[in-house]
Amino acid sequence: MDTGWIRLPWQDTVWQQLQAPGASMHHAMLLRGPAGIGKGRLARALAASLLCQRPGPSRDACGGCDSCGWLMAGNHPDFRRLSPAATLAEEAEIDGEGDATDAGSASKKPSQQITIDQIRGLASFMALTTHRGGARVLLVEPADTLNLAAANALLKTLEEPPPATRFVLVTGQPRRLPATVLSRCLSIHLPLPSAQQARHWLTQQGIAEPADLLAQAGGRPLLALELADPERAAARRQFLAQLSRPDFDPHGLAEKAHRDSVPLWVEWMQTWCHDLLLIQVGGLPRFHADEQPALQGLAQRADRGRLLDWELRLRTARWESRQSVNARLFCDDLLMDYRQLFT
Ligand SMILES: [Zn+2]
Image (tube, rainbow, N blue to C red):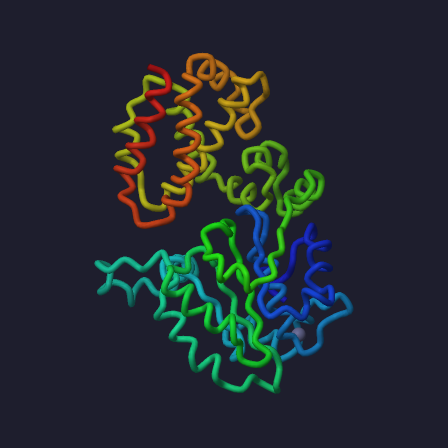
């Protein structure tokens, strides 16, 4: 089985929850929890297990049957995944596909949302009889990117699903989902792994000193692994070096903002802000322990009320940053607010 379809070591308890009689009979599961803890991995492991012809004693997919083979090859007739076109395009680019064919359509940006056309496109998938009378699985990831029309269209299928159909929805932001959709799903919360589990797993991935990375990632191991990427680590250092000088030039920094970097920048600003607030109440930085001296100096100078306002602003910015925004203007705005903390 490709690792992408195998659940992570800290997901044993939640896996048992998913296999318990009440949950295993439910046609729609909503897996929720923060980003970077392996929701997608668990969702894929669950999909594979539902489709597998010879699941093991813990109901994990066998990896050897026809069904598992088709899943790995990406052509299982009874499996579909719904994700925003932008996400799929990014993945295709990473896999080295699609760039040649996209050259002509470069002017039209792929959508950041799951659209109603994508739901309509499922009609024949939902209508056909499943292979050998097995399950049919629809993975929706992330479910909070369903736009309203798409959510309403999906709701109809959720309310009256075709036989043997199972839905697996994944979200880090369940509040962004319509209550009608939420009410049709069995919601399962994925907790953070223990620090020991996370460190152990990171060590197995080849990270020699996982503690600092794990702190920067707020205890989320998959995010910590991303942060270990040397390019990303360098980008973080450069960005934080700017934030640590209150006389930095927000416009100059914003000029360097790129659509792909915006969610990262927002994440760094948010954790930076969190650490400043912690220090102001006499605590120690949680995310950026390696920047403690700079944070201490800034925390003394920052206006408390404005800092709290900035914190609130960053919470919405995190979601907005995944939408279509003008990267430069968006970051300019946030960085200007940051500068104001020290005037
Ligand atoms: Zn199998």
